[in-house]
Structure formats: C-alpha cells, structure tokens
Length: 110
Length: 114
Image (cartoon, rainbow over all chains, first blue to last red):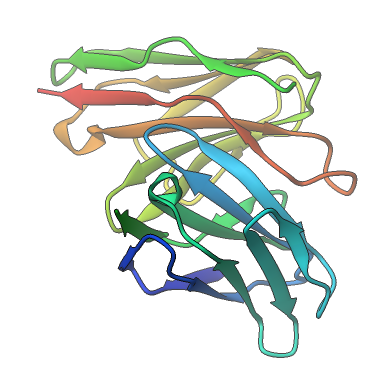
C-alpha cells in the first residue's frame, strides 16, 4: 500500500524564521512528488518534483527531492503571516492517483 | 486558468438522506477525483474517473457512488448519508496520466450530517 508521511504535524514560528517541512514516501513505481498549500479552502499547487537533487524555487519557497532517501523537503525562508497554512505532500506511482500525507500545519506569528 | 467548481460550499443534511455533490472543470481534463479531508487524516481518495462513464474505487469508497456522464462533470453520491460522512469533500481534476499529474482542486464542500 502506498504511503506518504509528513513531519512535523504542526509547527509554530515567528515572522522572519526559516522553516523546513519533511515528506517521506513509499510508493510503487514512483513517478513524482507534489507539494500543495492549503489555506481556508482548496489546496493550491506549489511544486512537482520528478528528478532527484534538482531544487525548484518560487520566491521564498523551495523544494528538493531525494530519491535515494525517498523523501523531499519544502523550505520557506523569511516566513510571513501569509505563509500560515497546511502544507500537503503527495506522491504518484503506478496507479492513476496521488497518495497524500496528513499535512503539516504551519502557523507564523507576527 | 484552470477552474474547478463545486456545487455547494456548505451543506447540512439529515441521516438517511440522499446527497449529491457536483463538480465541474473547464479545462478538458481526462481525470477527475473525489477526496474527503478530515483532521489528522489528510486527503483520502474516495473514487476517481479517467474517462467518461469510467470510474475506479479509491481508498474509502464504502457508502459512496459516483457518476461521470460528461467529461467535465463528476458527481459524488451518498446514497444514505450517515453522521460519519460529515467531512470536507474536495474534487480535483488533472490531465491524462503520463502528461501532467498535477491535480487542480475545487473550493470544497463542507458537509454536516445530523
């Protein structure tokens, strides 16, 4: 059975801090790993990673995949209160669907 | 811009009622998905469809059925709602597998079953 585990489950930081969110996966015939940000409603897509060691960046957010360790990290630098959200990690394999982790709840205090 | 819409944002139903949740996407996506999201459990896949009239069970299909009569529309049906189906329901769509696996989500329907 495919499995995705995220850590920590929740995190509280102050504005300006840097955070690292972790995701590990066990997926048959792994294809890609995706990160989503979920505020009050629908998850919105952040990154899709398919190759190991290549960092993807968008503003203060970056992510990298390690296929040897079956894991990925999402970094957020200089956090802002608007970064407060649930961050979801999902992996796709040979089946046609994504397996999601339970998410990391990030709270950024002013 | 991809747009996925869901028929209701909030819904309150009574135990035993039949419930229809509708999802429409406007990007000609082949794949459509229904998830439920519960605190601490993340998103769990209920059903998905990769073509019109095709459906496959996800991880938790019990108590649910689906219908996909048109490519852009995917309906989730609760034949006889129960209190343990109180949840946030999210619909998503994506292009055909092998081309782009990013799923785009609708705004969600928060269902309360009394």
